[in-house]
Length: 120
Image 1 (cartoon, rainbow, N blue to C red):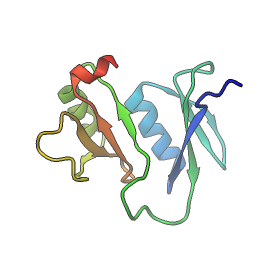
Image 2 (image 1 turned 90 degrees about the vertical axis):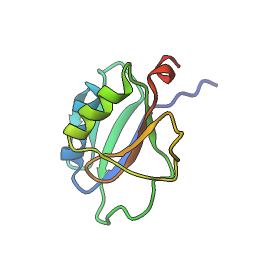
Image 3 (image 1 turned 30 degrees about the vertical axis):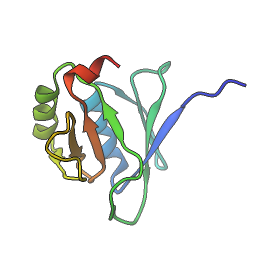
Image 4 (image 1 turned 180 degrees about the vertical axis):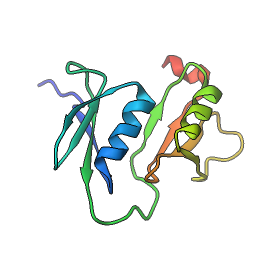
């Protein structure tokens, strides 16, 4: 049996808006824009993809699952993402952490790893 990660589904108050934000952040494209889901991926042949689905309730607590992004230059990417509307959040990572925890415009946490971690 072969098993692969196909998609990561993200609840969103504004699926289209959040999908556009993540597409820009990752340099990906919107592959499908429907009423029930918006799909973002590098291209039609690349997975995993991110799927944004509508939910009525607001995000209240820290995510149980989050994305880790591996940049060439952590500080440059953090600045770029903050300029796009991400904000720094404290989830208990501590001052010695080599990663930066950010939240997207709807409050979903994600990490930007240190540049040395980018080669993983």
